[in-house]
Structures are given as C-alpha cells and as structure tokens.
Image 1: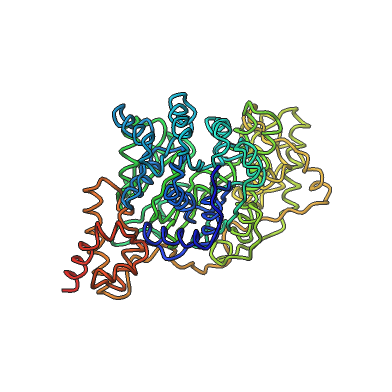
Image 2: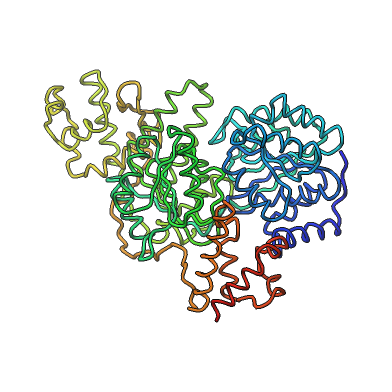
Length: 625
C-alpha cells in the first residue's frame, strides 16, 4: 500500500480542499485528524453524531488521494436515496462522483462502470449487496491491478453488527471484500454504536489496526421530551400545533410509527388536520415510496409519517422535529432516529409518547424472536436502557450520553430539566401489585393481564372478577386510591426492572420475575413521577427562528430562498444541495456586493462561486434596490 506521511504540507492540502471545494474555513472536532489519518493510508473507525460532518471525513481524503494518484474511493452506502443526494451534492461541487444501484438502467450502469475502469471517478457509491457480486469484484480487480483502488469507506457501519440497531446481513460480506484487497485502506463510519457494537464492527470489518475517533454524542440543539401515552394522535396534534405551526405553515418533521397500518392512519389524520403529510413504508409500491421521499426532500413544509426503515441516510438539514408515536427497540434506534432532527444546528424537538403496551410489545418481539438466548438477553438489556431513560425523572441527555460511555451534566434543555417532575414513593403500591399477581395465580392457577389486575386492585366487580372469585382475594380493592394511569406507570417500571415478566405466548399475562422478591421484602424502593407536572413553567418554543431581526436581511433571505428553489427545480435536486439555509442567512446578514465578497461566505466553494456567484449578486442587488 502506497502511503505518504502526515506532514504540514498534507494538512495544508486538506485545508485547501476544504476551502476550495466545500467552501468551509476550518475543520470541526476530530475531522482534521481523521482526514490526516485516512489520507495517509491508515485505517480508521469513526463514531460521530448525525450532523457532525462524517461525510467530509472520507470525501476530503478521497479527493486528496485521487490528487496523489491513488485512484477511486469506494463508498459503501445502504440506501439509494443517500447515494443520490451525496453524489448530486458532490457533482454540484465539481467532484467526479457516481453511484451504482438498482435505480439505474443497464446503459447508465455501464457508463459508470466504464468511468470506474477508466479512472475518471474520485468517489463511487455502491450498495453492500452489489459490492460482493462477481461482476463488481471483477471491475474492482481491474482497477486494483492498476494501483487505482484508493480507499473503502463503509458508511452506517453499525449495520455489520448483529448487536447493532439495524443489522443487515449483506454487510457481513464486506470483510471478504476488504480481505481481497487487504492493502487498500478502509474506514468504518457510524453515528450510533455502544461498546458491544463497536467491538463487533472492528471484528467484522477487520479494523483491528484502525485508529478510533469517537466524538461527543451530544446534540445540544435537540430538546428531548417524553410523555405518557394517552390519546397519542391528539397528543401529537397538540405538540405540532403548539411547537411547530405558525401563520406561515408548519415545520418539516418526521413521525415514526411501529406498523405500516399505523403509518397510513396517522398520515391520513394529519392530512385531515390541514397538514402536508405523506406515508412511507415498505408496503407501498416502489414508485410511490420514491415519489413520497423525493417530495419530502424537496418541500420546505412537509411531514413524513414512516416506519423506522425511513430516516437512515436522510441528509435533509431542516427537519425541525422527530416524533415517536411508538417506542423504538433500543437506545441506539432512538438516538439514530431523533438524530435526523435539526442537522443544521438550529433548535429542534425530539418528542415521544409511550405507554405500557409499548413496553409489552417490545418485550414480546424479543421473546418471540428465534434468535439465541444470549442475543435476546443483549436486546433486553438495550431495551431496558431505553425504558430507564424514558421513566427517569432526571436529565434525559445525561442518560443518553451515559449509555454511549460519555459523562455529562444536566443539560437544561430537556423536559425533565425545564420542568422537573415531582416524585413519590411508590414502594407500597408496588408491593400491592406484586402481591396481587401472586394471590391471583395462587387462587386460580391462572395468570391474567394488566387490565384485570387493575380491576382487582381498584375494587371493580366486573363479570370476569366475579367469575373467578377474585373479589374474595385479600388484595381486592387495596389500590382503590391509586389511578389507572399510576398503576400503568408502575407496571411499566416494574417490567423495566424485571420485577414483572410479560408472557406474550399467553395473551400478555403478567408474572412475577426475579427482582420482585427484593421489593416484596422491603429491600428495594420504587419511586414514580407524578402523572401531572408540579411546575407549570412553560418551556420556550424550541423551533428554529426563520425570521431575521433586520427587515432588509429578511427580505434578502426570502429572495435567495425563492431563487434557490427555482435552481433546485431546474437541476432536479433538493434545495439544500444548492445552498444550506445557513449559507443563505450568512449572505442575507452580510450581503456580498462584489465577486470578491463571495470568498468569505461559508459553504460557497470555487465551483459554486463559478456556477452561482453572478446570480446570487443579482438577487442581492435587486433586493437592495
């Protein structure tokens, strides 16, 4: 493997590529060190939060290594939409990039293959399942034989691990490909991976000698809010109306649901409420899915209601909120999905509603899985971490970051920090509930579900209670002073603490689990949040302020957005791939008067100055009069 040492001249070259191609004045965080490592031919493992600039970590080295004669960088990417957007953005910057995927016809694919063999490409995006095909390997063999295979960049690398939140079996073929070209540098990149997933990534991708770069997982611009599920649809509408809708319309957002049917229902209800919403799930026809995704990427005010398959690899920067109507499977999934919010660094909301049935459903899916017991236990532990965060009365962000091994202080920008919940000692109620489960099974030899147990505790003589003579139990009516909402909250926590086990094979009946004994003996306390917050202090609106303080700057900003929308439509690209909102705001707040002034605009590289500089100046001058 041909390498060149990390030197001041290489650092200078990297900074020049960053400035001239991408239009940025300086690297952020670990970017400079990662670029130096990879550009010099070293392997790397990169963990960086969504919106932290992972793409630059392989795009800049790809350009540097191409300039040094090393050839093409192969980017392994799992989603067609991501490939299209990133290749479109690179082409806008004047970088020779292409992709190979199932959306192309034979002639288009053959033209890309020709460009690959002819060393005309700097980056080629390929899906993992395509990379390992005999045809693709034969092409790479030809490129490699000429010393023109420069780097393998494996994006969303957590997909290679069975412990990751989005395991994809096709990623397991990547190790064989990397070993086939053992002298070619490789890097794995992801936004979400706990310790066990990281270890598996290293093993599955052969990154034993890779230098690890772990950035902070903190997304301080995102506000985390979790509410108890009552009427989820009504709660969602109140959230959107209060936080993300004004006279000019509504913000762009993503709503995640567990099932396809639920996605369809929620999208329809949002539409009836006057919101621009569309469904997205695997059950839709491919053309419909593609059309909905394109509309979401291109429209400013759009809500996508989706299953979790949507979202990974979506680069849209101005998603102002991500709402979960159903609980994700684990903390990584929650972090990955909420990470689609506010990639532009402006304020955003991560809002979730969940209830006892969410806990039961997630436990059931794990227990019903045909996987090995060891795998199931890891998945239970991951779910428990998410439940602990959801039930916590302390800072959400501290819990999230601790899961990824990062220490932090209370953030002051989550629901628990802004409006601290009061807590009460629920140990006695927990003992009543656990005793009731024991007495019911002792009396009848049968197990029952949550609703029936609550009826017993609250002293309701329903037909079912009387039929089984459960109104004769010592636990009948001992919990009449506790509301159903509080009983359900208590059940959630006891399931999370493994004091109660849900048997999905027997109609979600509840059984005592191993942690029940300590609570029943008074050796362990149980504390709950009050269902209503004591503090009524309202948090400030957390959405990004699109209004600039200076009326003239606002007028320039709106004029530039109108011009950008027209250009994007002509090019068939999302507007943010022409210029991000932040770049337009910078030009509006400090209007460029001459072509020389354009050099100081962050996000405007040489190619974009050549392509759009004159038009930008015309828009600014016309607005200024």
